[in-house]
Length: 379
Image 1 (spheres, rainbow, N blue to C red):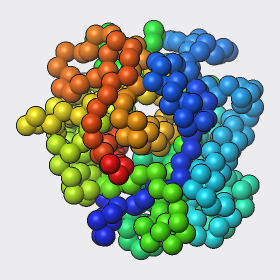
Image 2 (cartoon, helix red, strand yellow):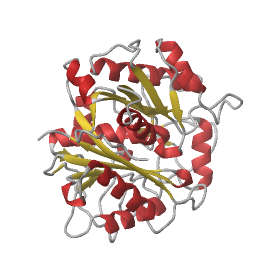
Image 3 (tube, helix red, strand yellow):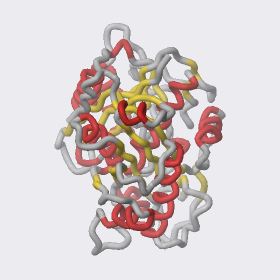
Image 4 (cartoon, rainbow, N blue to C red):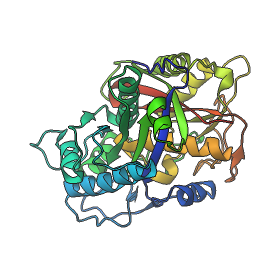
């Protein structure tokens, strides 16, 4: 499913907010990313793990019930995005579309996986029942995709889209047992990459039809001009090594946006730091960006941790900030680029400038889910 804006203007982004291990202020967190900061710190665990490090929200107590943590971070981030758009959460036009991987579900079984979204709607007095998405690490990106489709198809004028995920003991144990957790540090696309580090956070964007935004004189932060998704169905965790789903998701999103690979100036990669995912992503990008197309690539999971079902929304916000700033932050832990990586990366711990007003975000999830978002700003 892809968004088709019809009018050629795409779906406008009129508000956005995030909660990350580096804070919640958009500009301050962006400056921290540009400086190479990371939110990964030692986090005690009652169980033995491959790595004690994780990126946590410092102002939420770790002993808070996981479901309550999910609610608290989701509620404050959603409300901040709506306020940023100049709206009120009780506005009857708002439709919430939100994603998570398992949220608190692995640690508190027995409840419906979508219950957390209903709790958000009830707690914030949203006028309408939310739509929930759970497609592993692509959940937030798929929530963005669904919201954009609802607007493009005339079903909605304004959607609040994004994702929330929290760090829990079960998730840490699961990734430790799977071997996807790094025993050292998250080094996306580095020659010595050996796994990921978990994190938690949330991000929401307000998507709005152009006529609605114009009618109320809304500030426009950017435009979601195309989306695309694909699934390789290769297995419950490991992706198809060919990179086919990356190729299909990116090319379909660019086609929906009316753009070609040469139009893309910047790309936020999934960059989970696991050798399998990094190699799949590298192959897919090499097959997609040909004939001299060479967008600058960056990745934020070394700073935010792998926030699972929230990651796609966090990275969409990061793409818009990069397009506004015309720079990408350094990739934490990247010293020697892995052999064969096809596109320029910021190395040496410093930001890397680029030129262009079109950006792409790619997310790759367990179960074969791959989603691409194309975001633009006016030059």
